[in-house]
Length: 286
Image 1: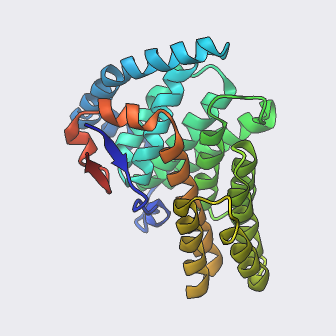
Image 2: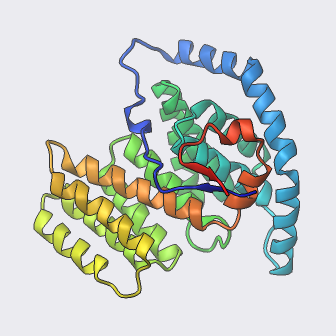
């Protein structure tokens, strides 16, 4: 039995910022309550045990290629990203917390912190989310997170784009999507980053032309062409804040792309108990 995460996943965490009064103190208390709660604890224990064989298998694969064995944090951060995309911030938080506790490499810490921030925003905790975002950005400033990291760089860039979207930094979204395209040798994704920047800068005619050029690339697969259509349809729809709408759809496409093309995704979902898989939209049993 295999579980496929379909392209129907749409990011909704951009709308999670609460309009209710809050404070760093009350958010910290809520965070403590979640971590102390039965749902968080039970899920995290199940996840750690379920993914152990996935980690072991992937580490063996990395060892054959003489790559550092950092799969433990990567596997759990990737699942955290899947939970973010599935609008399940509590499970995403459990994954990010565990990944961060295990991470030594600054790239892996950055990915875990970024997903932790997204989960906190998703829980309606903007102060905590922002604090984790600042901590993640400090890692970049201190260590740099360039392509010298062979493993998990796609996760780093896509998580960074999602966090930038959450915080309304559209130009950084564009930068991260362009970096994702370059890191994964997918020029069409780099082009979507350009489209995002052009839309933000108000040159929609240039964005249209770029999307048309990308769509007509003979090297694109049918699913990739459909992804380009998703962004094009949002641009055509326009609206008061079309730049944010285009950025949101572009990040959604990037997340779907990274999740679906990761060799770990199917292995993770195969091991995760069905009662949790059922909480992910767009899952089909085959």
